[in-house]
Image (cartoon, rainbow, N blue to C red; front, side, top):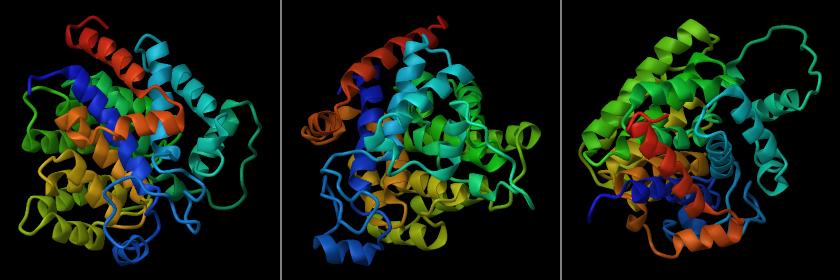
Length: 346
């Protein structure tokens, strides 16, 4: 198929949305519990069980992961493509006012930041104040539009990803994870992308995000995103079937809330499935634990790599209808800005 940057950008959005919506049905379960409940591995939109966070969602409905990415992208587009603190804060406030996405799903770190954006006085807590709880996947889950806006320009991607991340997750591990995802998406959207150079971009983003983060952000306890990412890629490119690799990534890397688990796992699933758009999501959705977030990131990378046409035809109209969001329209707007940036226009 002839290369189309619009198709790649739309693919990044469709992939992220698909991962979120599919993962909402499997979140917090193990692989065995997923099989037991659904009778099979989940490969399409399902109604989330009543005992999970997504209870009440319809098949194809988003949680906080892609919905926050959508509002972030829309705010940046409305800001003529400029990524600054004001645009990010406006995006998060706007998103917080859409209760269907925010009230049940938003994480504690982002909630606290939004309360401050709205002018609420947050008193300092007494006792030891550490930021371990801020080293989560909350910023990386919504960072993929930054990669879509900066095709092939990894250093600008990192600069923009840091601007976005510092507003809510100002620690070096969160920066490392967000930059890894954003850089993978940035490289994946290019015509000459292959699995290898996308993975190299992710490693570069993780390393640079860590380096810069140690200079400008807060230190925080926790495993290195970069080292876990190296492990996830090794597993993903190793021997075995995609399902065997899925289980090994879940066992050895982890797929939980911490940034050093979710981000390496997402990129590991991209590697394990050879960049396949749907296969990367299926691995992330069925591994268990924080499946919607991991699948959102894996889907964003794989979707940008293969394009929107790699997904079943009903995915996009289902998501647009159920969520009331114009994903195609947003892709058009992002594409206009991305093309200008590629030509050095903004």
